[in-house]
Amino acid sequence: MLFFLKRTAKEKKMEKEKTFKFQAELVSGKCPTCNSFTTLVGLAHDFFRCMTCGADLQQHVNGKISYLPAMGKREDGGVPYVKDWK
Image (cartoon, rainbow, N blue to C red; front, side, top):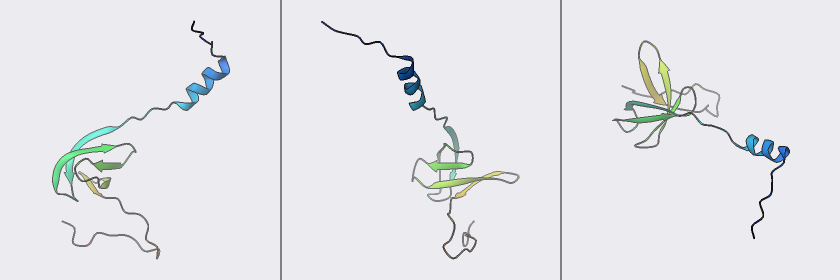
């Protein structure tokens, strides 16, 4: 014999609080790290990940949309830059 327990309103509310939604943005673009046209997946507003090499990229919009490698802050407080970027 099977017994089915009814969930209380508190249990239902706790179950709803545990769930959340992701809304991913898929775009096609050229990854500067692996130099291939690929699908880029974005979960945040301006950060994307290359599906080919897995590099984290930051989207820059200045007349055209470009994707550059995402770089963290330097330990010495300097500004990060990409040397000889084409």
